[in-house]
Amino acid sequence: MAISRVMLRDPSYTSYLARVLLALGVLVSVSFVFITQNTYDTGDSILHYLFARFAPHHSLNLLDNWAKPLLTLLLMGPAQLGLRGVMLCQCGLVAASAWLSYRVAERLQIPYAALAILLCYTAPDYFRIQFSGLTEPLFGLLLIGGVALLVQGRPGWSAALVSWLPFVRSEGFILLGLWVVCLAWQRQWRALPLLLLGYLVYSAVGAVVLGEPGWVFGRNSYPTISPYGRGSWKTFIVALLYLMGWVMTILVALGGGQLLGRLPQKATWRNPLFPAELLLVYGVIAVFVTAHTLFWVFGLFGSAGMTRVLTVLTPLLAIVALRGLSWLLLLGRTALAQQRIAGGIAALAFVFLFTGLRMEMRWKRDFGQPGDLALIEQATRWYRQQPDLAQRLVIMQHPAVVEALDIDIFAYEGRPPTAAFGRPQMSKLSPGTVVFWDGWFSPVEGGLPLDSLANNPHFRRRWAGSALRQADDTGQGMCQLQVFEKIK
Image 1 (cartoon, one colour):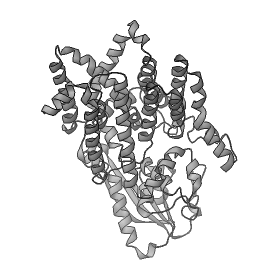
Image 2: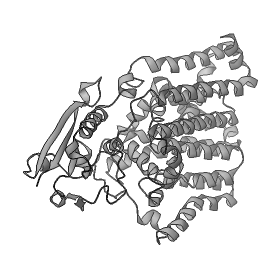
Image 3: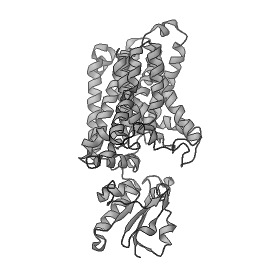
Image 4: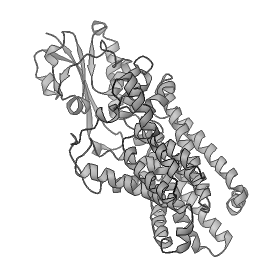
């Protein structure tokens, strides 16, 4: 404790403390890669992994708009080691983001900048999303990387880096507008064209490979009107609180108040780094949350109300939280008192993770095996023990079934078309075809309700199971998995 007390009091130890916190964060994360039975999301998480894994055999996967080209390219190597390899890569992305969050806070001269790393790792959802194949960790890294380069006086490199944002998540096109305003505010005219770098490169690749220079927009995977309906105005606001946890939520709220207190001060506007902080930290957070709220409320652009997207903001939220902490430090009249406040807040951020509160960590929910993965494990084990089903054509919608059976769904012979315009064409399947039906992906994504198989004389049910979606919460309902065989 004596060492940590000196570290927090003396800024010369900030870098050392940051390295210690980062090393601990990485050590815990990597350990959990081999402990967790969860993939954060059992659909998109696994599907992104599959796109990357089979990219060496199907090069067009690298230009798939839904899969996101830059993510697929980055994960292609780690994916050859399996889903755990992808998780290890994601741990590296989160570690780099946490470090850059600290560097930005340090550059902005925010007290106790090293605690940005602790705040990143104690944000519950951000910690969990490392163990997935999702887009959010890479998108978050590009965001905080762009901010770090700009506050370090490298506007051209910043613009070039964030130009790749749209090829990790489509919201990147919106956020590029904030970089335009910020660079124009700072009169960095030469850097502005570099915001087009990613688009120009991928357009050129598309022109050569696909014969479509405009493929980025021409092959957009998200319909204007979402097939998932619409939702509440408060969905993403409430989700933001769950992302951060109690301690960080309070600090971020204080950070917002601290910004309002600084705005009337002339010294604030004379600070050359203020435009970057205002637009690319506070502005990005506000625009991102607002955009997703509008998409969900009005049912636009394929929004399904998936609040996990907010995790990309964690490194930026850590900076706002430190601003809130700096305001809280005013309660301490001496350096020692302020050190105790900062140390106490850091301890609370860590301790609250283990309270079992809904906004914090819960072992079974966060790291235990979800019900659908447990069912898929049981069903595929049964399937492999059926000699009469060997070498049969298998049809499925759930990505975890694909991963469990090790099927190349990008090969025509592995999964031929079974639907036209979203309507099932199960009658065209040959006798002996095996269909894995699940309660979500099959009816929602595949347009295949259970009745179309259970009440169809051409299909016979061979296996069925159900389980709680979440082992420690009966309120989450049940999930189902059934296996059918076409008999005539």
